[in-house]
Amino acid sequence: MKTVKFELNGQPFFLCFNGAAFFALQEKFGEGFNIGTLLAETNGKYDTLCELLSLLSEQGELTRRYLGYAPADIPAPEFFAVTLSPLDALRAKKAVLDALRLGFARDVKDTQGIDLYELEYQKKNGLGLNASQYIGTLTQALGLSVREGLLLTLGQVNDLLCIRLKSLPPRR
Image 1: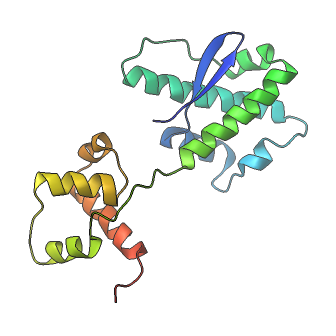
Image 2: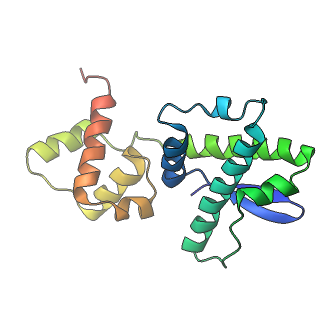
């Protein structure tokens, strides 16, 4: 998972916008939340910035722990509220926006090596993929890392392939 490093008084915080953070924001601010509105410079938005920093640093810390790093403290929004200087608040706002941008970004890899229409034909005619083709499909056609792809069930991979095929222009 991609994180943005934000340092406050020499202490690093790793901000991560993942699915858990996305759904937590939806739950708190509603499904149609607009991050620009949340961070707008009006009264009461400093608390929102501190909440976002806390949420994203919590997810970053949980990600680091999952990857085997030593546990660190997960800060509360109040920690940021009392320790951020005005300059730190501006840097924090930029870091939050960078984390959101990274969370929504896609790593698109070259799909020239895999013919998605051929895969669809093989699926319809009962032709299976060998392990090499399966990994290639996960990494090239779907843009997943090998680790992410291997954690998916075959049904999930099939669903992702169907969505990807539907998004392609018709073949002539």
